[in-house]
Structure formats: C-alpha cells, structure tokens
Image (cartoon, rainbow, N blue to C red; front, side):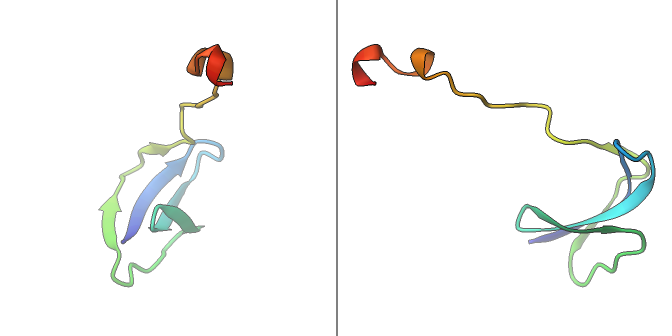
Length: 68
C-alpha cells in the first residue's frame, strides 16, 4: 500500500516536504509529489522525526544463563 504524506516538516531540516512511502519504506522526499493511487494524508506542518525507540538486546538479561 502506498501512502503520500503532504506538507510534512522534517525535524532535521525544518522545511516542508512531501513523503511517499510504499510497503513501509520511504521511496521519495520532495515537494509536489504526485499521488498516483497512494492514500494522501495532509500533515499540515506537523513534524516528522526518526523513531524515538532503540531496541538493544542484553543477552545476559534476556535469556537464562544455562541457555547461552
């Protein structure tokens, strides 16, 4: 499924742009991107940032010692 986010503000650059995503992967960044069948969502200047969570794995805490 394709999604087109219009009027997003990139946190790193502080400028508006459109974001085209297909199957959960960003395909294009730019202004005036065409929908071409994508579901369009107007973000109206909302900020887009990278993910806030990191998922480190600590094997000494995730598994009992006898399984390592």
